[in-house]
Image (cartoon, rainbow, N blue to C red; front, side, top):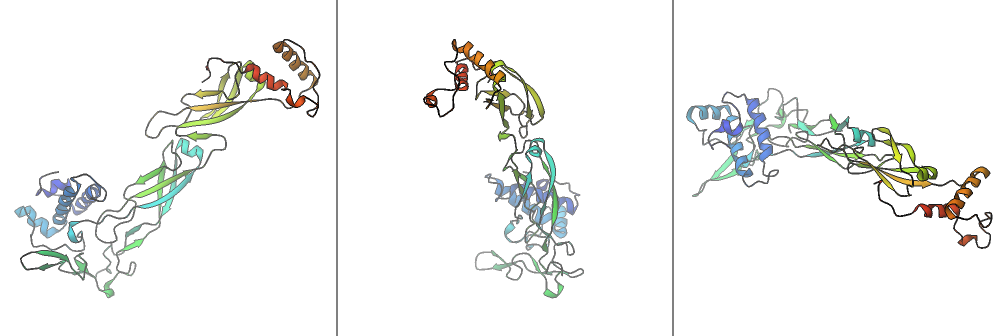
Length: 364
């Protein structure tokens, strides 16, 4: 921070800065260093200096004295309607929350959507003053000084330290003299690619304005709900997909097409693939937030077996069984209730067991 009495440098504005420029800079700095939001050891000290600088430069009379003499009027009260209230502490508006729902596909690719909120805002007809057009607020002392060896500053009971009051007859009809109303707004929201379910997005300055005073508004926090995919599951940036693989492809190998978040791709299946084997498609997952890297897609292979065969198909399979077992079948297949059949493994069970041999995990 700049030296304590260099108010322009403290607020980061030029000496000929307009009131709107001073106020804008003050809001940004006060929000950043407010003790409720910033837990750094020096945040409170910086905040007090920011508040002191704004209290002087936002008051044209004090600013004139400061520019001419290097100090503001030390006997000044708490300021008028544009002041910051009692105690040198600015009130920061409350944060608000909203939620949006997006599809799995839009969360993966990113999308633009909108959300409707009803934050507390300054009343437009009276510009937050609470007074009718042409009416004036009544300036109050802002503080009571109790003598007796000590100077004690207390908030004025009439204005509660705000520095001014307004009569009921002069109150703004739109806000009832409060200077604040709720306003329905539609906020455009950019959902980043890779957004996950439960992600919380922050939109600074889109929350409630303070009920009293001229502090900055709070923030808007948006909770994102991502609908589940019908075919994919997700864990972080990685995507998972279950593949039903014909047993002939598992035995002989081949090429299949599988869906990814970018569209279908061709995948090579090695001969002798086992049920439960997993393949990884590098870089075919979801984009990581705030990174150009992507996750992977994992394919879980489920080998499917036919439930019925033609006579020709059965003959081919029996010949294959004879080939791998080294002997012909002892008897033709019988019904499932035939004596002894409940303990005899079927052909497809033996076929799966035949291929469940130890091998290098090349497919992972």
